[in-house]
Amino acid sequence: MKRILVTGGAGYIGSVLSKKLVEAGYDIVVLDALIYTGVGVDALQNHPRFRLIPGDIRDLDLLKTALTGVDCVVHLAALANDPSAELNPALTRQVNLEIYPALLNAAAATGVKRFLNMSSISVYGVSHNENLTEDDPVNPLTEYAVCKARSEAIVRASNRDDFTTVSLRCGTVCGWSPRMRFDLCTNTLTAYAIVNRKLAVWGGMQKRPQIHIGDVTNYLLALIEIDKEVGGKIFNAAGHNTSVREVAETIRAVMKGAVELEDGPAREDERSYTVSSEKISRELGLTPEFSIKDAVAGIVDAHQRGLWCNPDDVLYHNVKRMAAMEKAAAC
Ligand SMILES: NC(=O)c1ccc[n+]([C@@H]2O[C@H](COP(=O)([O-])OP(=O)(O)OC[C@H]3O[C@@H](n4cnc5c(N)ncnc54)[C@H](O)[C@@H]3O)[C@@H](O)[C@H]2O)c1
Image (cartoon, rainbow, N blue to C red):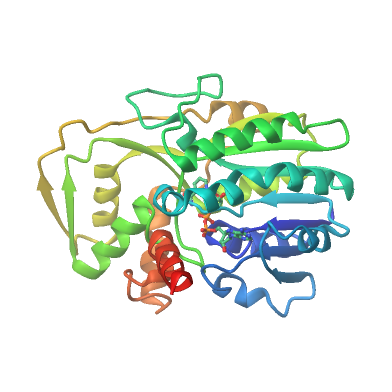
């Protein structure tokens, strides 16, 4: 593997991954519609092994250009959460699902050897289940999750001896990225704790699997390089099964008590679920290196260094940004 195409490589995960891959010695091509600007990859722009192609993955000519000489594709481009996917379901279907056959065919036809697909533990649906594994049935409850579940099936069916395809079911990601998202659990709680010095926790015993951005990007790097049999497989990369209250307590500890926790009653049906990442650990030896505490500390540090100040900025919230774009397009 020498040249990697990262679709959505200017996004929250993609910005951290692209930097890591450049530093690991790869030639990187990023194809990204720059919905949240190119701020995440600004620092890479002059690097000789980095190329940004601004544009849409649905533009098949552009896609062919981006795939030239590429050995591996990391496919991250998507409307990347439930609310933004609900805004315009037809667009979501196109970007998050219908593009897959053309994308996979173009990749295989141009000699790509490996295709890594970013999926989500949302395919399980939020339930009262414990320790969900890759063998458990999926139960996608939202447009976003339905697209992820169906894309996994398409990706798996495209696996061949000379074209290895893998899907990674990722937990909710946390931690600092140069293209920041403050619409993800730990990131949101940390940002508003810093700004308001208060954190309201309603019950908070519900568990949500969360993975540090350093770990998910390490896993992707490992999947590019790994020599083991991964073709046609799906791996959970859920990270830590953490309750909202544990996150809040971690924030208070990192902020050395400078934040007040306000308790409220739990909502009636506070669904909780945990996901097992035992398979990726057992088969590939991949386990988390980073903690929720590391994620919180990274966001606090970025604030202290003046890298962000207003967590309400539209660019940090996918649904607000998408809604603003839809509104502007309608005028
Ligand atoms: N962040 C999480 O917690 C999380 C969890 C599980 C799975 N994922 C998946 O990981 C991937 C990356 O998520 P993220 O958090 O970095 O989101 P993000 O929104 O920050 O990044 C997505 C990137 O894709 C680009 N994009 C969107 N539509 C495009 C199109 N039609 N053509 C080209 N580029 C397009 C956007 O401009 C953006 O830079 C997504 O597939 C998401 O569903 C994310």
